[in-house]
Length: 146
Ligand code: FES
Ligand code: FES
Image (tube, rainbow, N blue to C red; front, side, top):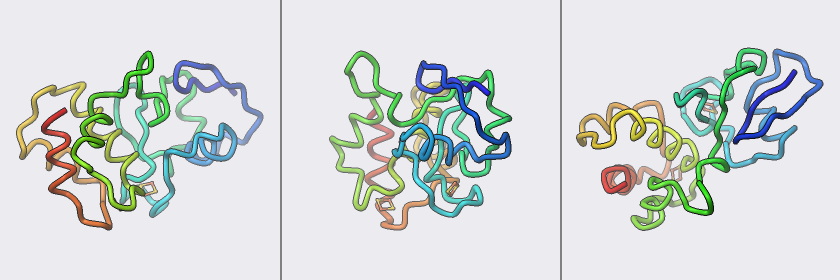
């Protein structure tokens, strides 16, 4: 099967019931997306699929053929960080950073649909992303600033 990731086609000889997260991390060596809960609850593994932030741990690779997949590694453009990546750095919105990739992906999806979300809209959009270090205030500030 062929999947389209970060602007490139990848031909893979793997079972269609392989999780997208395994494909990204093991087969394509794109390790920015993290394995947390493995059941769609924490958001650490989120990637963009046709512009929507989805948990790659519970997404079968067969279901994302012919779709545009973007991982944290593919968010920058022409050497420029995505605005959300930039403001996460500026606001120090990391502690252990295990959640950061998924947080940034969710925030990027939100910003692409709603460039100036209210604080409440940010909180609602980030509901399915968990930060065990509990640095939510810095994360929300970074998203507001982006
Ligand atoms: S590892 Fe996928 S949602 Fe937690
Ligand atoms: S910074 Fe550690 S889980 Fe969020």
